[in-house]
Length: 59
Image 1: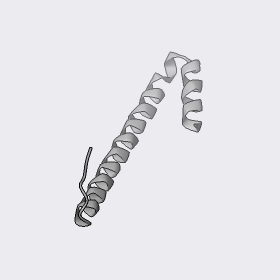
Image 2: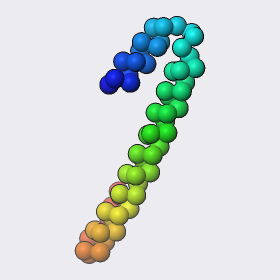
Image 3: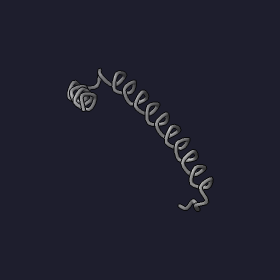
Image 4: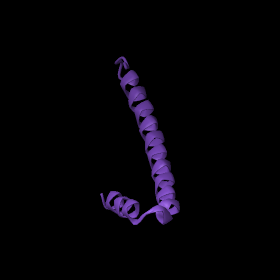
């Protein structure tokens, strides 16, 4: 939330804040990508455990 507020302040600040906004967006993208990888690994582990107990994995 704090980052979003800061981003809005930067937008209101005008064109000279574009480099900082771009940096924020790139860092956010990297964080989202990392979280997706972590969730994918967690899903694989959970599906493995379900299969180990004789259950079926589904969509």
